[in-house]
Amino acid sequence: MSSSDSSWRVLEEGKPEWEIDVHQRGASVNGNTYFFAHDRFDDIEPDADGSIPVDGVEDFLLCFDFTKERFGPRLPLPFHSYNEDCVTLSSFLRGDDDEQLAALFGGCESDFFEIWVTLSVEPNHVSWTKFLVVETGGPIFTRLNFKLSTYFGGSFFVDEENKVAVVFERVSYISISAPPPSQHTAFVFGQAGYIQSVNLGQALKLQHFSPYSGKHCQALLPPLVCSSSFRPTLVQVS
Image (cartoon, rainbow, N blue to C red):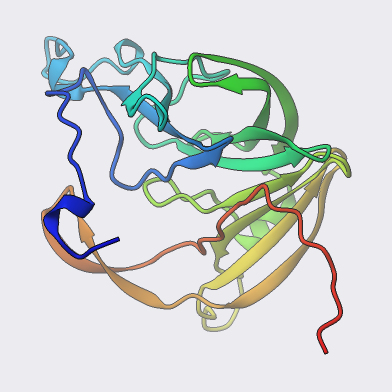
């Protein structure tokens, strides 16, 4: 690939009737990329008090088809989210070569989150089944101060064969003394609930650009772990 301007092309489609939030990360499945998207807020008729009716904002899945070099139709999601809810996508391998999509959804004020996986996924078709529901209102989650990030959601992956999911988040352990720094943590969940957690180290303040304020600011962001359908093979290195 040369370094000239011809190395890249911009696909002009005009202003779409939907938008993908800047903090949303896509997931690659079978060579295409899927995104969580929703109606444009500036296209929604506001209520009498000027607020946007949350029930009037449709959310859906979009696939960018690299063969056709365009986005496909709106694909249904098995849940309906609101502005501050957590929605994160991931990919996984079913069997030896069947790539599928997973979606984590958690309401910002609810005490549970759920993970759905696809039975089939194509640029113009998707079907879902529920994989896992985790109740987060118990005492152990209170002690861990566990709460799903919203605008900058953490990442996750699923192991369908062993029926477990690993969710990466930032937590602050409650203490009667001075509060310790926030920690990056990997939580392992099974169908019977919480299994264990692994501390991944202190969460550092990172500078990022906020699209809402238009300014650069510092924030404690959740850990980002890239999901992949790649299944590693142990080899001996001489």
